[in-house]
Image (cartoon, rainbow, N blue to C red; front, side):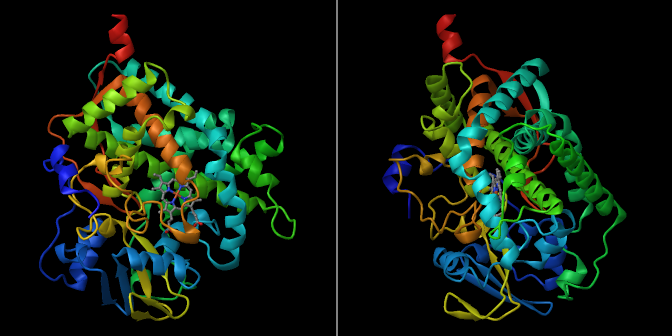
Length: 475
Ligand code: HEM
Protein backbone atom coordinates (compact mmCIF):
# COMPACT_ATOMS: atom_id res chain seq x y z
CA UNK A 1 0.00 0.00 0.00
CA UNK A 2 1.63 3.21 -0.99
CA UNK A 3 0.77 5.56 1.94
CA UNK A 4 2.23 4.27 5.21
CA UNK A 5 0.12 4.17 8.39
CA UNK A 6 2.62 6.58 9.93
CA UNK A 7 2.22 9.13 7.12
CA UNK A 8 -1.56 8.85 7.43
CA UNK A 9 -1.34 9.42 11.20
CA UNK A 10 1.26 12.19 11.31
CA UNK A 11 -0.39 14.21 8.53
CA UNK A 12 -3.95 13.64 9.79
CA UNK A 13 -5.07 12.14 6.46
CA UNK A 14 -7.58 9.56 7.70
CA UNK A 15 -10.43 12.05 7.97
CA UNK A 16 -9.83 13.58 4.52
CA UNK A 17 -12.83 14.52 2.42
CA UNK A 18 -14.58 11.70 0.50
CA UNK A 19 -16.01 13.24 -2.66
CA UNK A 20 -19.11 11.87 -4.43
CA UNK A 21 -19.22 8.87 -6.74
CA UNK A 22 -22.19 7.15 -8.42
CA UNK A 23 -24.07 4.66 -6.24
CA UNK A 24 -22.31 1.26 -6.14
CA UNK A 25 -24.81 -1.59 -6.21
CA UNK A 26 -24.13 -4.72 -4.19
CA UNK A 27 -26.59 -6.95 -6.04
CA UNK A 28 -26.14 -8.43 -9.51
CA UNK A 29 -27.48 -6.16 -12.28
CA UNK A 30 -29.38 -7.42 -15.32
CA UNK A 31 -28.12 -6.44 -18.77
CA UNK A 32 -31.16 -4.17 -19.21
CA UNK A 33 -30.53 -2.40 -15.93
CA UNK A 34 -26.88 -1.88 -16.87
CA UNK A 35 -27.89 -0.40 -20.24
CA UNK A 36 -30.45 1.85 -18.56
CA UNK A 37 -27.92 3.05 -15.98
CA UNK A 38 -25.10 3.32 -18.54
CA UNK A 39 -27.10 5.43 -20.99
CA UNK A 40 -27.37 8.11 -18.29
CA UNK A 41 -23.96 7.66 -16.66
CA UNK A 42 -21.41 5.07 -17.79
CA UNK A 43 -19.89 4.83 -14.30
CA UNK A 44 -23.18 3.99 -12.60
CA UNK A 45 -22.97 0.42 -13.96
CA UNK A 46 -20.09 -0.64 -11.66
CA UNK A 47 -20.87 -2.54 -8.46
CA UNK A 48 -18.97 -2.55 -5.14
CA UNK A 49 -17.49 -5.89 -6.11
CA UNK A 50 -16.08 -4.52 -9.41
CA UNK A 51 -13.67 -2.23 -7.53
CA UNK A 52 -11.98 -5.23 -5.90
CA UNK A 53 -12.07 -7.58 -8.85
CA UNK A 54 -8.91 -7.90 -10.97
CA UNK A 55 -10.76 -8.77 -14.15
CA UNK A 56 -14.42 -8.91 -15.08
CA UNK A 57 -15.49 -11.11 -17.98
CA UNK A 58 -19.03 -10.77 -19.19
CA UNK A 59 -21.15 -11.72 -22.16
CA UNK A 60 -23.13 -8.73 -23.24
CA UNK A 61 -25.60 -8.86 -26.15
CA UNK A 62 -23.33 -11.08 -28.23
CA UNK A 63 -20.06 -9.40 -27.22
CA UNK A 64 -17.52 -10.74 -24.80
CA UNK A 65 -16.39 -7.91 -22.58
CA UNK A 66 -13.21 -7.97 -20.48
CA UNK A 67 -12.77 -5.20 -17.92
CA UNK A 68 -9.26 -4.86 -16.54
CA UNK A 69 -8.70 -3.54 -13.02
CA UNK A 70 -5.15 -4.57 -12.21
CA UNK A 71 -1.75 -2.97 -12.93
CA UNK A 72 -0.39 -6.17 -14.49
CA UNK A 73 -3.39 -6.29 -16.83
CA UNK A 74 -2.70 -2.70 -17.90
CA UNK A 75 0.87 -3.67 -18.82
CA UNK A 76 -0.38 -6.67 -20.81
CA UNK A 77 -3.13 -4.73 -22.61
CA UNK A 78 -1.63 -1.32 -23.32
CA UNK A 79 2.04 -2.29 -23.66
CA UNK A 80 2.80 -5.97 -24.34
CA UNK A 81 -0.12 -6.60 -26.71
CA UNK A 82 -0.70 -3.00 -27.78
CA UNK A 83 -0.73 -3.99 -31.47
CA UNK A 84 -3.58 -6.51 -31.02
CA UNK A 85 -5.52 -4.22 -28.69
CA UNK A 86 -4.91 -0.93 -30.52
CA UNK A 87 -8.33 -0.43 -32.11
CA UNK A 88 -10.75 1.79 -30.20
CA UNK A 89 -14.11 0.45 -28.99
CA UNK A 90 -17.15 0.67 -31.30
CA UNK A 91 -18.76 3.16 -28.89
CA UNK A 92 -15.81 5.56 -29.19
CA UNK A 93 -15.54 5.14 -32.95
CA UNK A 94 -19.23 5.57 -33.69
CA UNK A 95 -19.69 8.57 -31.44
CA UNK A 96 -16.58 10.45 -32.54
CA UNK A 97 -15.94 9.49 -36.17
CA UNK A 98 -18.52 11.87 -37.69
CA UNK A 99 -16.64 14.77 -36.10
CA UNK A 100 -13.01 13.55 -36.20
CA UNK A 101 -13.02 11.46 -39.41
CA UNK A 102 -9.72 9.56 -39.56
CA UNK A 103 -8.16 11.79 -36.83
CA UNK A 104 -5.57 10.31 -34.48
CA UNK A 105 -7.89 9.75 -31.52
CA UNK A 106 -10.15 7.25 -33.32
CA UNK A 107 -7.91 5.88 -36.10
CA UNK A 108 -5.91 2.65 -35.99
CA UNK A 109 -3.52 0.58 -38.12
CA UNK A 110 -1.40 2.40 -40.69
CA UNK A 111 -3.32 5.67 -40.53
CA UNK A 112 -2.85 5.87 -36.77
CA UNK A 113 0.88 5.00 -36.96
CA UNK A 114 1.53 7.65 -39.63
CA UNK A 115 -0.51 10.36 -37.90
CA UNK A 116 0.95 9.58 -34.48
CA UNK A 117 4.46 10.22 -35.87
CA UNK A 118 3.32 13.59 -37.14
CA UNK A 119 0.95 14.85 -34.41
CA UNK A 120 2.60 13.62 -31.18
CA UNK A 121 5.85 15.64 -31.59
CA UNK A 122 3.85 18.80 -32.34
CA UNK A 123 2.08 18.82 -28.93
CA UNK A 124 4.82 16.95 -27.04
CA UNK A 125 6.30 18.07 -23.72
CA UNK A 126 9.52 19.10 -25.46
CA UNK A 127 7.60 22.03 -26.97
CA UNK A 128 5.96 23.13 -23.73
CA UNK A 129 8.18 26.23 -23.56
CA UNK A 130 6.46 27.44 -26.75
CA UNK A 131 2.98 26.95 -25.30
CA UNK A 132 3.46 27.92 -21.62
CA UNK A 133 3.46 31.72 -22.25
CA UNK A 134 -0.04 31.36 -23.77
CA UNK A 135 -1.14 29.53 -20.58
CA UNK A 136 0.27 32.29 -18.35
CA UNK A 137 -1.34 35.04 -20.49
CA UNK A 138 -4.78 33.43 -20.43
CA UNK A 139 -4.52 32.64 -16.68
CA UNK A 140 -3.73 36.33 -16.03
CA UNK A 141 -6.68 37.40 -18.22
CA UNK A 142 -8.94 35.08 -16.21
CA UNK A 143 -7.79 36.66 -12.95
CA UNK A 144 -8.81 40.04 -14.38
CA UNK A 145 -12.14 38.64 -15.56
CA UNK A 146 -12.91 37.18 -12.10
CA UNK A 147 -11.81 40.43 -10.45
CA UNK A 148 -14.28 42.30 -12.68
CA UNK A 149 -17.02 39.81 -11.73
CA UNK A 150 -16.75 41.22 -8.18
CA UNK A 151 -16.04 39.84 -4.72
CA UNK A 152 -18.51 37.07 -3.85
CA UNK A 153 -19.79 36.65 -7.45
CA UNK A 154 -21.44 33.31 -8.22
CA UNK A 155 -20.06 31.63 -11.35
CA UNK A 156 -20.46 28.24 -13.04
CA UNK A 157 -16.88 27.06 -12.56
CA UNK A 158 -17.20 24.16 -15.01
CA UNK A 159 -18.28 26.60 -17.72
CA UNK A 160 -15.51 29.04 -16.73
CA UNK A 161 -12.83 26.36 -16.94
CA UNK A 162 -14.23 25.19 -20.30
CA UNK A 163 -13.86 28.73 -21.68
CA UNK A 164 -10.39 29.16 -20.18
CA UNK A 165 -8.93 25.91 -21.54
CA UNK A 166 -10.65 26.45 -24.91
CA UNK A 167 -8.99 29.86 -25.13
CA UNK A 168 -5.59 28.30 -24.38
CA UNK A 169 -5.90 25.42 -26.84
CA UNK A 170 -7.43 27.66 -29.51
CA UNK A 171 -4.54 30.17 -29.36
CA UNK A 172 -2.10 27.22 -29.28
CA UNK A 173 -3.52 25.62 -32.41
CA UNK A 174 -4.50 28.66 -34.44
CA UNK A 175 -2.24 31.40 -33.05
CA UNK A 176 -3.21 34.32 -30.82
CA UNK A 177 -5.26 36.29 -33.37
CA UNK A 178 -7.27 33.55 -35.11
CA UNK A 179 -7.54 31.62 -31.87
CA UNK A 180 -9.11 34.57 -30.04
CA UNK A 181 -11.55 35.28 -32.85
CA UNK A 182 -12.86 31.73 -33.23
CA UNK A 183 -12.83 30.06 -29.79
CA UNK A 184 -16.50 30.69 -29.05
CA UNK A 185 -17.84 29.34 -32.31
CA UNK A 186 -15.74 26.17 -31.98
CA UNK A 187 -16.79 25.42 -28.41
CA UNK A 188 -20.44 26.10 -29.21
CA UNK A 189 -20.14 23.49 -31.99
CA UNK A 190 -18.47 20.96 -29.67
CA UNK A 191 -21.07 21.49 -26.96
CA UNK A 192 -23.92 21.02 -29.44
CA UNK A 193 -22.25 17.89 -30.84
CA UNK A 194 -21.74 16.35 -27.44
CA UNK A 195 -25.33 17.08 -26.44
CA UNK A 196 -26.73 15.51 -29.59
CA UNK A 197 -24.91 12.17 -29.64
CA UNK A 198 -26.12 9.01 -28.02
CA UNK A 199 -23.21 7.38 -26.20
CA UNK A 200 -24.78 3.91 -26.25
CA UNK A 201 -26.46 3.48 -29.62
CA UNK A 202 -28.33 0.26 -30.32
CA UNK A 203 -26.53 -0.72 -33.54
CA UNK A 204 -23.27 -0.65 -31.61
CA UNK A 205 -24.62 -2.50 -28.59
CA UNK A 206 -26.10 -5.22 -30.78
CA UNK A 207 -22.70 -5.64 -32.47
CA UNK A 208 -24.00 -4.81 -35.95
CA UNK A 209 -21.20 -4.30 -38.47
CA UNK A 210 -19.35 -1.01 -38.82
CA UNK A 211 -20.42 -0.53 -42.46
CA UNK A 212 -24.12 -0.39 -41.54
CA UNK A 213 -25.16 3.26 -41.78
CA UNK A 214 -25.76 4.71 -38.30
CA UNK A 215 -28.59 7.09 -37.76
CA UNK A 216 -27.22 10.56 -37.09
CA UNK A 217 -29.68 13.11 -35.89
CA UNK A 218 -29.93 16.37 -37.78
CA UNK A 219 -28.68 18.06 -34.64
CA UNK A 220 -25.49 15.94 -34.72
CA UNK A 221 -24.86 16.70 -38.37
CA UNK A 222 -25.53 20.41 -37.90
CA UNK A 223 -23.12 20.57 -34.96
CA UNK A 224 -20.47 18.65 -36.92
CA UNK A 225 -20.88 21.02 -39.88
CA UNK A 226 -20.56 24.03 -37.59
CA UNK A 227 -17.19 22.81 -36.26
CA UNK A 228 -15.95 21.83 -39.73
CA UNK A 229 -16.99 25.17 -41.23
CA UNK A 230 -15.10 27.29 -38.72
CA UNK A 231 -11.93 25.16 -38.91
CA UNK A 232 -12.04 25.21 -42.73
CA UNK A 233 -12.36 29.00 -42.65
CA UNK A 234 -9.30 29.23 -40.40
CA UNK A 235 -7.35 26.96 -42.75
CA UNK A 236 -8.27 29.21 -45.68
CA UNK A 237 -7.02 32.26 -43.77
CA UNK A 238 -3.87 30.39 -42.82
CA UNK A 239 -3.21 29.70 -46.50
CA UNK A 240 -3.38 33.43 -47.16
CA UNK A 241 -0.55 33.87 -44.63
CA UNK A 242 -2.68 35.09 -41.73
CA UNK A 243 -1.31 33.04 -38.81
CA UNK A 244 1.33 33.13 -36.04
CA UNK A 245 4.73 31.54 -36.60
CA UNK A 246 4.45 29.15 -33.70
CA UNK A 247 0.86 27.95 -34.09
CA UNK A 248 0.29 24.19 -34.17
CA UNK A 249 -1.61 24.51 -37.43
CA UNK A 250 1.55 25.76 -39.12
CA UNK A 251 3.37 22.64 -37.95
CA UNK A 252 0.53 20.50 -39.36
CA UNK A 253 0.95 22.24 -42.72
CA UNK A 254 4.71 21.77 -42.67
CA UNK A 255 4.56 18.09 -41.61
CA UNK A 256 5.52 15.41 -44.14
CA UNK A 257 4.75 11.68 -44.02
CA UNK A 258 7.36 8.91 -44.54
CA UNK A 259 7.10 9.40 -48.35
CA UNK A 260 7.60 13.14 -48.01
CA UNK A 261 3.96 13.99 -48.79
CA UNK A 262 2.09 16.75 -46.89
CA UNK A 263 -1.16 16.08 -45.02
CA UNK A 264 -4.35 16.60 -47.03
CA UNK A 265 -6.61 19.52 -46.05
CA UNK A 266 -9.11 17.07 -44.55
CA UNK A 267 -6.35 15.43 -42.48
CA UNK A 268 -5.20 18.84 -41.22
CA UNK A 269 -8.78 19.69 -40.26
CA UNK A 270 -9.30 16.35 -38.52
CA UNK A 271 -6.08 16.60 -36.51
CA UNK A 272 -6.77 20.21 -35.52
CA UNK A 273 -10.18 19.07 -34.23
CA UNK A 274 -8.60 16.11 -32.39
CA UNK A 275 -6.14 18.36 -30.58
CA UNK A 276 -8.83 20.90 -29.74
CA UNK A 277 -11.22 18.25 -28.45
CA UNK A 278 -8.60 16.15 -26.62
CA UNK A 279 -6.99 19.16 -25.03
CA UNK A 280 -9.96 21.28 -24.05
CA UNK A 281 -12.63 19.47 -22.05
CA UNK A 282 -10.23 17.08 -20.27
CA UNK A 283 -8.23 19.87 -18.67
CA UNK A 284 -11.38 21.93 -18.01
CA UNK A 285 -12.96 19.05 -16.09
CA UNK A 286 -9.75 18.54 -14.10
CA UNK A 287 -9.60 22.19 -13.04
CA UNK A 288 -13.32 22.30 -12.18
CA UNK A 289 -13.05 19.15 -10.04
CA UNK A 290 -9.91 20.56 -8.39
CA UNK A 291 -11.72 23.75 -7.33
CA UNK A 292 -14.61 21.71 -5.95
CA UNK A 293 -12.30 19.30 -4.04
CA UNK A 294 -10.22 22.13 -2.58
CA UNK A 295 -13.39 23.94 -1.47
CA UNK A 296 -14.36 20.89 0.61
CA UNK A 297 -10.96 20.33 2.22
CA UNK A 298 -9.68 23.06 4.60
CA UNK A 299 -6.34 21.28 5.12
CA UNK A 300 -5.61 21.16 1.40
CA UNK A 301 -6.80 24.73 0.86
CA UNK A 302 -4.41 26.09 3.51
CA UNK A 303 -1.43 24.14 2.12
CA UNK A 304 -2.20 25.26 -1.43
CA UNK A 305 -2.56 28.92 -0.46
CA UNK A 306 0.67 28.77 1.54
CA UNK A 307 2.57 27.35 -1.44
CA UNK A 308 1.30 29.74 -4.10
CA UNK A 309 1.78 32.76 -1.83
CA UNK A 310 5.34 31.77 -0.94
CA UNK A 311 6.42 30.88 -4.48
CA UNK A 312 4.65 33.52 -6.53
CA UNK A 313 4.42 36.54 -4.22
CA UNK A 314 1.75 38.13 -6.42
CA UNK A 315 3.29 37.31 -9.84
CA UNK A 316 1.51 35.36 -12.58
CA UNK A 317 3.04 31.88 -12.65
CA UNK A 318 5.21 30.90 -15.61
CA UNK A 319 6.80 27.65 -16.77
CA UNK A 320 9.81 28.36 -14.53
CA UNK A 321 7.56 28.28 -11.42
CA UNK A 322 5.99 24.89 -12.12
CA UNK A 323 8.81 22.89 -10.54
CA UNK A 324 8.57 24.97 -7.38
CA UNK A 325 4.85 24.21 -6.96
CA UNK A 326 4.89 20.50 -5.91
CA UNK A 327 1.76 20.71 -3.75
CA UNK A 328 -0.23 22.44 -6.51
CA UNK A 329 0.84 19.67 -8.87
CA UNK A 330 -0.10 17.04 -6.25
CA UNK A 331 -3.61 18.55 -6.06
CA UNK A 332 -3.93 18.16 -9.84
CA UNK A 333 -2.57 14.60 -9.80
CA UNK A 334 -4.92 13.58 -6.98
CA UNK A 335 -7.84 15.17 -8.86
CA UNK A 336 -6.89 13.11 -11.94
CA UNK A 337 -6.72 9.95 -9.80
CA UNK A 338 -10.20 10.45 -8.33
CA UNK A 339 -11.84 11.86 -11.44
CA UNK A 340 -9.91 10.73 -14.54
CA UNK A 341 -11.50 12.73 -17.41
CA UNK A 342 -11.24 9.59 -19.58
CA UNK A 343 -12.35 7.00 -17.00
CA UNK A 344 -12.71 4.03 -19.37
CA UNK A 345 -10.26 3.18 -22.16
CA UNK A 346 -12.10 0.99 -24.65
CA UNK A 347 -10.42 -1.33 -27.14
CA UNK A 348 -11.47 -3.98 -29.68
CA UNK A 349 -9.23 -7.07 -30.06
CA UNK A 350 -8.16 -7.45 -33.70
CA UNK A 351 -6.46 -10.82 -33.08
CA UNK A 352 -6.06 -13.44 -30.38
CA UNK A 353 -4.59 -12.26 -27.08
CA UNK A 354 -4.59 -12.91 -23.35
CA UNK A 355 -5.56 -10.96 -20.26
CA UNK A 356 -4.29 -12.14 -16.87
CA UNK A 357 -4.06 -15.77 -18.03
CA UNK A 358 -7.42 -15.81 -19.89
CA UNK A 359 -7.80 -15.89 -23.63
CA UNK A 360 -9.16 -12.93 -25.56
CA UNK A 361 -10.69 -13.66 -28.98
CA UNK A 362 -10.76 -11.41 -32.06
CA UNK A 363 -13.72 -9.04 -31.79
CA UNK A 364 -13.82 -9.13 -27.97
CA UNK A 365 -14.12 -5.80 -26.21
CA UNK A 366 -11.62 -4.71 -23.58
CA UNK A 367 -12.03 -1.92 -21.12
CA UNK A 368 -9.03 -0.74 -19.15
CA UNK A 369 -10.71 1.19 -16.37
CA UNK A 370 -8.79 4.03 -14.68
CA UNK A 371 -12.07 4.63 -12.80
CA UNK A 372 -11.76 1.25 -11.03
CA UNK A 373 -7.98 0.95 -10.99
CA UNK A 374 -7.37 4.36 -9.44
CA UNK A 375 -9.76 3.53 -6.57
CA UNK A 376 -8.73 -0.12 -6.12
CA UNK A 377 -8.12 -0.66 -2.41
CA UNK A 378 -5.53 -3.39 -3.07
CA UNK A 379 -3.40 -0.67 -4.67
CA UNK A 380 -4.29 2.56 -2.86
CA UNK A 381 -4.67 3.48 0.80
CA UNK A 382 -7.76 5.64 1.48
CA UNK A 383 -8.87 4.98 -2.12
CA UNK A 384 -11.97 7.21 -2.15
CA UNK A 385 -10.46 10.04 -0.05
CA UNK A 386 -9.03 13.28 -1.44
CA UNK A 387 -5.39 13.10 -0.31
CA UNK A 388 -3.02 15.16 -2.52
CA UNK A 389 -0.20 14.37 -0.06
CA UNK A 390 0.11 10.92 -1.68
CA UNK A 391 1.64 12.68 -4.71
CA UNK A 392 4.04 14.93 -2.80
CA UNK A 393 7.64 13.81 -3.46
CA UNK A 394 9.25 12.58 -0.25
CA UNK A 395 5.96 11.91 1.57
CA UNK A 396 5.03 8.75 -0.32
CA UNK A 397 6.71 6.63 -3.01
CA UNK A 398 5.50 7.26 -6.58
CA UNK A 399 2.50 5.00 -7.26
CA UNK A 400 2.90 2.01 -9.55
CA UNK A 401 2.95 3.46 -13.08
CA UNK A 402 0.39 0.92 -14.31
CA UNK A 403 -1.99 1.75 -11.43
CA UNK A 404 -2.30 5.46 -12.13
CA UNK A 405 -3.11 6.01 -15.79
CA UNK A 406 -5.23 9.15 -16.30
CA UNK A 407 -3.26 9.76 -19.51
CA UNK A 408 -3.39 6.05 -20.55
CA UNK A 409 -0.12 4.23 -21.15
CA UNK A 410 1.81 2.53 -23.96
CA UNK A 411 2.00 3.61 -27.62
CA UNK A 412 -1.36 5.45 -27.47
CA UNK A 413 -0.46 7.36 -24.29
CA UNK A 414 -1.72 10.96 -24.34
CA UNK A 415 0.90 13.03 -26.21
CA UNK A 416 -0.45 16.17 -24.50
CA UNK A 417 0.33 14.98 -20.95
CA UNK A 418 3.06 17.51 -20.15
CA UNK A 419 1.04 20.24 -21.86
CA UNK A 420 -2.01 19.41 -19.73
CA UNK A 421 -0.16 19.14 -16.40
CA UNK A 422 1.69 22.39 -17.02
CA UNK A 423 -1.52 24.15 -18.02
CA UNK A 424 -3.45 22.85 -15.00
CA UNK A 425 -0.68 23.82 -12.54
CA UNK A 426 -0.25 27.33 -14.02
CA UNK A 427 -4.01 28.03 -14.08
CA UNK A 428 -4.73 26.61 -10.63
CA UNK A 429 -1.78 28.46 -9.07
CA UNK A 430 -2.71 31.76 -10.76
CA UNK A 431 -6.37 31.62 -9.68
CA UNK A 432 -5.78 30.17 -6.19
CA UNK A 433 -3.31 32.95 -5.49
CA UNK A 434 -6.03 35.55 -6.03
CA UNK A 435 -9.31 33.80 -5.21
CA UNK A 436 -10.86 31.56 -2.61
CA UNK A 437 -13.45 29.58 -4.56
CA UNK A 438 -16.30 28.16 -2.45
CA UNK A 439 -19.23 25.93 -3.34
CA UNK A 440 -22.43 27.98 -3.54
CA UNK A 441 -25.02 27.21 -0.89
CA UNK A 442 -27.40 24.35 -1.63
CA UNK A 443 -25.39 22.96 -4.57
CA UNK A 444 -25.05 19.17 -4.74
CA UNK A 445 -22.24 17.84 -6.89
CA UNK A 446 -22.30 14.49 -8.68
CA UNK A 447 -19.95 12.67 -11.05
CA UNK A 448 -21.45 12.56 -14.53
CA UNK A 449 -19.90 10.49 -17.34
CA UNK A 450 -20.95 10.63 -20.97
CA UNK A 451 -17.90 11.07 -23.20
CA UNK A 452 -15.77 12.45 -20.37
CA UNK A 453 -16.15 12.46 -16.60
CA UNK A 454 -17.21 15.81 -15.20
CA UNK A 455 -19.07 17.35 -12.29
CA UNK A 456 -22.76 18.04 -12.81
CA UNK A 457 -23.29 21.33 -14.53
CA UNK A 458 -23.78 24.14 -13.58
CA UNK A 459 -21.07 23.91 -10.90
CA UNK A 460 -22.09 27.06 -9.03
CA UNK A 461 -19.29 28.44 -6.89
CA UNK A 462 -18.68 31.83 -5.28
CA UNK A 463 -15.44 33.69 -5.98
CA UNK A 464 -13.85 35.56 -3.07
CA UNK A 465 -10.82 37.82 -3.40
CA UNK A 466 -7.92 36.94 -1.19
CA UNK A 467 -4.97 39.13 -0.26
CA UNK A 468 -1.70 37.46 -1.23
CA UNK A 469 1.21 37.22 1.21
CA UNK A 470 2.84 39.99 -0.83
CA UNK A 471 -0.16 42.32 -0.47
CA UNK A 472 -0.41 41.43 3.23
CA UNK A 473 3.24 42.28 3.79
CA UNK A 474 2.88 45.61 1.93
CA UNK A 475 -0.24 46.48 3.96
C1 HEM B 1 -6.00 16.54 -18.11
C2 HEM B 1 -5.94 16.55 -19.44
C3 HEM B 1 -5.87 15.34 -20.31
C4 HEM B 1 -6.16 14.03 -20.04
C5 HEM B 1 -6.62 13.42 -18.72
C6 HEM B 1 -5.94 13.29 -21.26
C7 HEM B 1 -6.11 11.91 -21.37
C8 HEM B 1 -5.93 11.21 -22.55
C9 HEM B 1 -6.13 9.79 -22.66
C10 HEM B 1 -6.55 8.85 -21.55
C11 HEM B 1 -5.87 9.45 -23.96
C12 HEM B 1 -5.91 8.06 -24.56
C13 HEM B 1 -7.32 7.61 -24.83
C14 HEM B 1 -7.35 6.15 -25.27
O1 HEM B 1 -6.31 5.55 -25.51
O2 HEM B 1 -8.47 5.63 -25.40
C15 HEM B 1 -5.53 10.68 -24.66
C16 HEM B 1 -5.23 10.75 -26.00
C17 HEM B 1 -4.87 11.89 -26.65
N1 HEM B 1 -4.67 13.13 -26.08
FE1 HEM B 1 -4.95 13.62 -24.13
N2 HEM B 1 -5.52 14.15 -22.23
C18 HEM B 1 -5.45 15.41 -21.71
C19 HEM B 1 -5.04 16.56 -22.35
C20 HEM B 1 -4.56 16.60 -23.64
C21 HEM B 1 -4.01 17.78 -24.28
C22 HEM B 1 -3.85 19.14 -23.60
C23 HEM B 1 -3.71 17.44 -25.57
C24 HEM B 1 -3.11 18.27 -26.68
C25 HEM B 1 -2.52 19.42 -26.51
C26 HEM B 1 -4.07 16.04 -25.74
C27 HEM B 1 -3.94 15.33 -26.91
C28 HEM B 1 -4.28 14.00 -27.06
C29 HEM B 1 -4.23 13.29 -28.35
C30 HEM B 1 -3.84 13.90 -29.70
C31 HEM B 1 -4.61 11.97 -28.09
C32 HEM B 1 -4.74 10.82 -29.09
C33 HEM B 1 -3.48 9.96 -29.03
C34 HEM B 1 -3.53 8.68 -29.84
O3 HEM B 1 -4.61 8.10 -30.04
O4 HEM B 1 -2.45 8.24 -30.28
N3 HEM B 1 -4.57 15.57 -24.55
N4 HEM B 1 -5.56 11.72 -23.78
